Length: 233
Image (cartoon, rainbow, N blue to C red; front, side, top):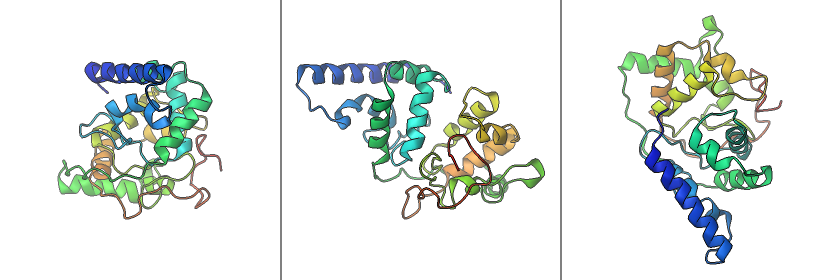
């Protein structure tokens, strides 16, 4: 994914200003104030930005957000601005950040208009709802839930993300530049997807509106078909 240097610098500057204000006692020492730097890329409350580079993080499971923050800090996920910003933050602080964004309940952006012909969008829907048994690919719904809002504590929702972001993450899983604790089930799935399937899945997911109650399912709501290191059974 292409890095936006200007936005990265704004993010760093916002964090520096916030930290200086806290140190001088001129700003309230709350998590909402401390994560102001995150809003430059992810929106004021983590709702994501209208462009296609920065994902919605509001309302995602706290365990998932904590895992991603720690992975960026420790280099399991590679995106230099995030790696830099989180390099010296300890687990307790990351846990507080994750909890703050997980608790946000704010409206979703409008779905992305379908960018593929109907037949290809239908193929994407097929993969999301039924998978591709011939290639050993389970449906996305089997792990991310029938509403695609994720499962507590470690499986994220897929609704409200841009197609280019989804495609980029699947490509990163395939290439091994994004990793998770073993067994890394997303890596196992991503390497079985073709380029066309990645495009189809991403386009269909991005075109879906948020459900009436867009919150992650409770822990233990159902057993996923794969054992994943990020979601203990």
